Length: 191
Image (cartoon, rainbow, N blue to C red):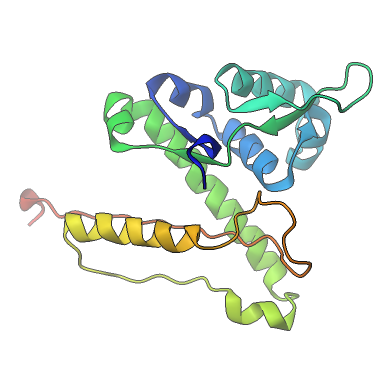
């Protein structure tokens, strides 16, 4: 994945995306491609006025851009400006409240994706069953090991075809890979 396909959040841009609806809209544009505020409103069960407002906010902060050459009349099409959003520790420390709002919205989006998959998993074609899992592991790691694990998982994912790459094989489907690496640190005063 190229550096241009990623956006690294800073405290200012974080404010522009730290809203549950904006995270959902951005996710839909990344997953399904360009859309209008009306089509997004239908998918989200909202008014097109609400989605239009949040699309304009996302555009102000550079997360979405207008898709030119589409639409008729006043119809505006929007697409995600990047394939991936990165939030680093420096930004979390500089804007903790906005970072928490953003991370809670991302976590809710992950939960929605998992719920949708569970609803569809019973009718999943047989050839896709071995390639799916909903699992976890409890590890005891040092901070350095946790960082290395995160980097190694990211490197593995980069070896596979990304969603936005053109002309995938005919039998390729969207596969969502979610990672939550969550240290639960005991403090000395916790006993």
